[in-house]
Image 1 (cartoon, rainbow, N blue to C red):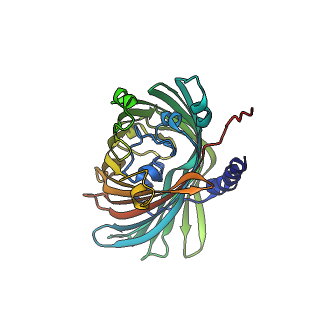
Image 2 (image 1 turned 135 degrees about the vertical axis):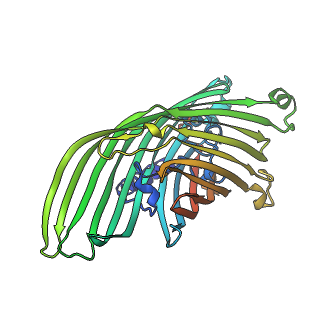
Length: 441
């Protein structure tokens, strides 16, 4: 009971902080759409690049495919933080910078205590799980200046700035029957995004400086669903001889339909006469209602488990971002996709005298095409992932620290290129006594 209260208190303290905190980013690519999209892979899954369609773990929550909740054998509370270093270049100029975020808060648990289930003489084919989480969905953060020359107007400067982002709070449930599971998340998308543009004429003090700003609050109901089939390949041989090395293949799929979002917008356009400090407001539309469409998405993959020693798999996901619409800020995006190959190796999960053998070492590679387009060239993102899961005991319960590293290049072949490195640190605390029914003789 103490642990349950503690986890809920931590959530109640951090949830308002996370929801009200300003997301930090510094990427010119975030000027498109609703910003740079955040992956739904938690730190445990980021280490091998994300195998969220089909990967299941009894101690870690997989929010990418809600069908995985039914495979949980312990309540889990997870939180993650990240830091990212990047070098942005346009061929002539370079910008270096660090930024970081609180990445997610997640709580998940089986709806029937696994200890009670193991002691029940009647073995049931059904199993259920549930999850709640809050995390960033997208981030906007950039500040770009360009200087140009005109034969009539002289030198002038274009400034583009944006900040903000969106969050999603989701509630998910899953049901498992024998080897097949199905789950769904439903929730709420919300956030604030601000875009600013201005032109400043440096050579002519008698020219008006133009300013244009859009400030809009986004909200809408969202959902996603998934399925997982887990095939115990050598189940018969294992039941006859428990020393046989297990072989399991998981196949999973997840996705969502196109979904609407709504916005309340403040749009202003001004001309500032700098020499006389006069401002002429050309447009001032406050509280204007708008709407838009987020795209349909689909992902699928497979994961093979070789006993408790190694895992290898792939994940493919597709987003129909050409369907994206925003009545306040019209722009054209392209369909996105991502392919990930990854796996992990743990020398000996049962080792008592060598802690390093109980660590899971992870690796992965990925290639993706993002929705953003610059000069008719779609943005690509290519890189590698490394990671490790460090088990430890907290109040006599198994828990984990998960570290993930990502190194990549974004925007190859376009006027702007990012080279980056990202580190994510996740903490998972487990408790197998939730919903336990105690019996006394």
